[in-house]
Image (tube, rainbow, N blue to C red):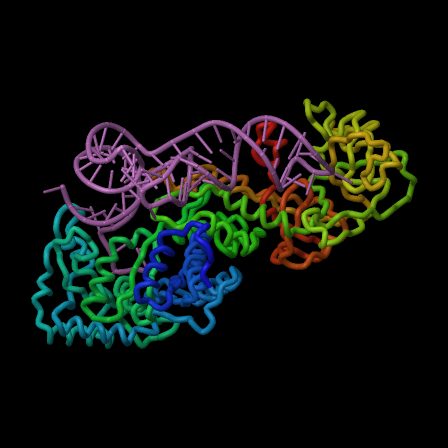
Length: 562
RNA sequence: UGGGGCAUCGUAUAACGGCAGUACAGCGGACUCUGGAUCCGCUAGUCUAGGUUCGAAUCCUAGUGCCCCAGCCA
């Protein structure tokens, strides 16, 4: 199922795969290897799209493999969340779900083999000693005296390690490579350490656990992974990846590295995201401000928009920071085509139509989505008293203000043209709290039979029928493009204190009183919103703002977001 | 002279010895019952210095800048 035509340019990994396909490899087998110690974020989505995407495009397969080699950090709840997220993105692993722990026995056999060949040894150095012996970036390390142990002694000790005869930290198994290598990973890397904790899948059957470098490549090989795609920081692990496979003489998977995703105005590492959650800066991994898949989902992002974003950013080896506006562009583009429109007044200001009959009411036709007429129409109620947006009225408007002001005309969307004939103030605050308008009955539906041009159109909600809803306006979580670039400051110092604004008195057209879960809307002139089924109550529906509409007026005024 | 990697508009990303293109952002205009969307246009780039070549973002040499590595994390 290759894409036809060379019109679309190909990233270097797909080009490499295409080349390998011509020289022997039958089909690409990739894998997505999360460690179940945190939630997936948009950076993982890049990897998911790459690995599963390649499998789809080239008629291969992609395995889901949990890298569960460290029981002191991992948990099943993360595993379940990860599976949910991948499924939600729209990818399937079918029966191809694996665990590094599936291979513990095989890995152990492999280790025995290396020991028997004098290529690995049991070391009794302490963690600190190992660090000291490793040397520094510019000085070679020195060899542990354990290197001299006999094969028999190593075998005996390693078997005893497995049996749990030693304490944590007492011994490790190391590969015997080269303590003078310029590549730190080759300075006799640790293969196994003793961890006396139960594992979620193997329970207490092991007291030694393989390190990443030892587990990963061999797992790839066992599964017949043709292309093992990982991020740049593993580039200098590749010689070790290759060394193990070559010493063992097993199937040679190939590791290829690409640049991880960085997004402006956010942080994208599990460690930092974990900190935001643990220290209560956000309301959990799925807080709509989080760049996690579950957070984006709750924020109103669609799988399609995320996949489109991943396609747009491409795959390269260049460290880069993607502007978060590109992500916002992807969701706007998607939702513009699909989101049902609704009228919701976020900051209500009462409007009375002075010449509209007392007690009168009518239903007006509104288009559900001007971009997709097949989505039909709906009736919205109209009567003498309405709510409009506070900032759609100005007593002393600046130039080019097309909305309502004393004496001016504006169109009430899908309703009538109205003219402002007066307003009232709150006697205490002096704030305008009601506007009076006259409507033109000839302009029903918002048309102007006389051909007159009315520049401004504003949204409104019938006061009598309005659903009272809560709306949460989200803004970027950080105030600076790269919160982790300042090495002297903790990234949490750059948290945006206004990243969440909750409006509890919004007036929505009646239909929104009972929205289905996870329904995307466009609140006309305001932005895209999604019904939040976690925090909504029957008497108080909650909507999260996914992203605002582009707003050339506020940019004109020099503001950023409303 | 520790090892590894990367340098193209503001941000990303193409061009694989032959017109430096695309997207986002920005700016201007058209259109509009969403100051949305759409459409049109503009601005703006090959890290530096040499070299090879009819021709270099691309090949060579030398430099410069940035990123990663000293977990019994992944």
